[in-house]
Length: 533
Image (cartoon, rainbow, N blue to C red):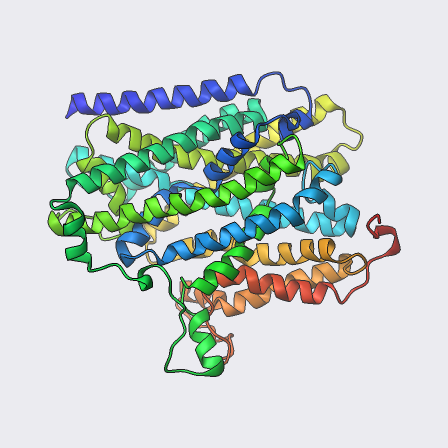
């Protein structure tokens, strides 16, 4: 066992040294904020594509998507990937050109030109709070592998205190290692390390898929025998109850997580929100030399999502077949931990280290982009206009690097708090609330951005603020957020009217956008903010 652990540890060590070295080398010679935030707009489109894929694939995806395949034993989750392609095409032709035309570093600068400073400040603040909570909260997921590894090595499950220290140690290590190359290398370091991390992630997933298939006795025949014949309903579902009619029929559709309508419509809005109004995603798009190549990277990253999601779902389904053929009494009860359990107990030595490196690659890839975007948004939206107006290029570069450090520390605080709540208070379901926080805020953000881009003389600071607040409240009602919060304290809050469906998460951004946009356009833009003809 010791020799095998040494080999796996060596693979991990090589990975960390490689990533940090490449990050520091590629990010050298940065002279100003433009270099740090946009890489001088000299990044090849295919590297931007890989960075987009790495950024949107977190450790939660690495475990969660196989968990969906394991639990559902179908591909209905894949329907959401169809809508991401539609969403990215819309992002490419609605958002990217205005961002290039206005020469923004932070995308919220566009809102200053279109509506005024208050709208920009509100949007920037919403982004920073949302991204900090969402990215920090899911950092602990990568530490699950270490907690299970401790159990494998010691033969005993760690207690609450030991698990908490494992989670905290892993979180701090991931953040520090990521912050090193992100602080000094900026967006160039982020994108080029993302390329390596995306390659490791995809390669390790394909290796796992091949090993799983070869480990199933009887191969395809065994899979079909245990699962049954694959039907269209294993991929496409409508959520429409044939026994119901009218609004009741539609309510059933909105109350079903994975449907073709949620995929084509809901996921398209999700993608417009995450890839059009989130500095985290858009910043890397703006590093491409021109609009045409930026669009190419965005659209192709959407096409890449289909085989990637299919691969992870297939891993989950094959895991179910494998453990049906090879019953394991130590198998975790949580589907999200099943893939990690297989990696630790069934993967050959060396490959196990590669798969664990893939887990850390997904965590570090999404983390590096988040703290880089947070630092850029803070420096451009708050430091330069308020803290140090008229700052020099050297001062702004120093500020964005210090902001990277401080946001890294805040990430550790959020991740540590999340770990404590998950481990010490397992009945407190804070994670679904924190991880889905972007679904409550990105609908209002998207509604305001679309108001600015689809109209010339509608929307102003007061109207946008009112619209965003109403949009947030509406999504909170249809998603039963108030009941979820009340449930933490053992209470029930009946706020949603009975005629409104309990809408599932793929629709939240869609409805938040529609409500926000509908209210924002009721207000007229001041003449000084009319866009140029």
